Length: 322
Image (tube, rainbow, N blue to C red; front, side):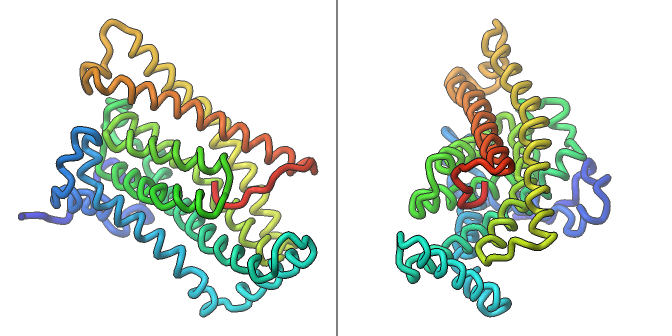
């Protein structure tokens, strides 16, 4: 009904050719999803996020498809890598006697699918986060807590779909409480950003994924036994450096500034949360602050494990993407 492909927003023009190869496709996807009007009844709970539920479902379906297609694709394109993973898994099973080689190989193949999804997702999300961080949209500058753009909404919807996929995967494959907490927290954060509330901070948090491609590249090399290369050392150093700089230094400052701003607003006699969203939204605003602080705590916990691993102290190893 008169739908047309929008042009790239003016605030993204400074990103250069690398950010404008497909002008406005993210905004077009959001506009298409909203035009379907399939889940308008959910707007009372999800706000504007109800309009992009089709995108969220598509995103979750894509990650499921990538997970199950990755190993067959690798067998076709780089069979030597898959053979190396099978050999390493089988040898470790024989050494440990905790499981049969067949079970170990199956588990390793599952890990390859999951880690590949995490690698691809984090790379795409990091791109979107960098664009928004280097070229903040005027909506975020003017109204950081309630501002929203279709470009940022697209990446929030993409991330929401990823965590819809990630949550059951974390449970099914037993990746542990830390990753389960991360999946639940991030899924909640993304839905809050789509409402929209604190979309500026949520899309900034996507920048945390800058460390994840290094982590998953490292894990994929460990799975195949390729741990003596210069690239492996580069990935280890890149992971630790980006984790510390983005998640700890920059992330803590940005997160606590947001938490302080919202708490002061809620305690004031003229709260914007109530004025803009209504009294019923206050618990969600409080949840946003709690999740913000909790995820900072989780990042601090993970960074302590990175330090232990770097200094040679024993600690449980990461089993999948952040």
